[in-house]
Image (cartoon, rainbow, N blue to C red):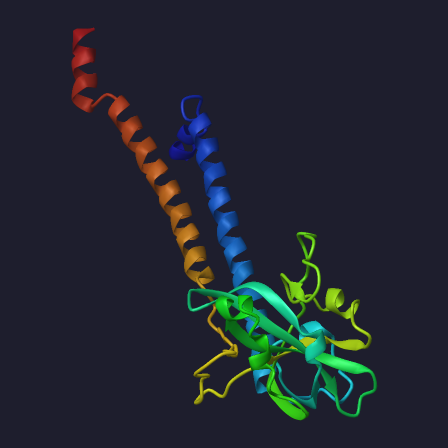
Length: 258
């Protein structure tokens, strides 16, 4: 009780309030990291469900919203429309600058409907030299297997280049310029795990991260900071108060002097 009175005495009240505010901030940051951890676990559960699900046939109607289809395995049969191919600018691959090839594939058995296929990355010099036709050899009916990706929103509201060049894989923007409909997802033509591409276009493998991130360790860190801040402040107050309090010998001497 004496310590509590000291903490809220006129001498220490300012420091006590400041320390309590700091401790409250640390606790809030710790709780926020725990919330981020739960959010990450929820995302991991959705991703794991996508990984465990059977491949989708894109010729069949999509039963879920696009957001629920990300990372799902999928397959489709159809014919590429290379005349409407889009070149996604400013794409890097292992530190090199290049472009991604985004090509509509007309779906067999589905009238007037295509899906955008990310066919992979080619180097910038090949694109500037006008050599994209060398990568358009998959003519006729083809079957493409890969995983689904979402449309990239145009948050910056920047103006896209004219023609076949784009800065992002935005399905709505591309769909508006095509004479047929597009599915609301992108099919990424992924290489088999045991057979990476040896020459362009280099297809994009699916990257899966099911870790929980650093959120738990960060939360523990903030809670430790809370305890240390309060403990060190209590130690400082007790020590200073003890130094300011006269010792028994000093008190006895003062009484004898009087």
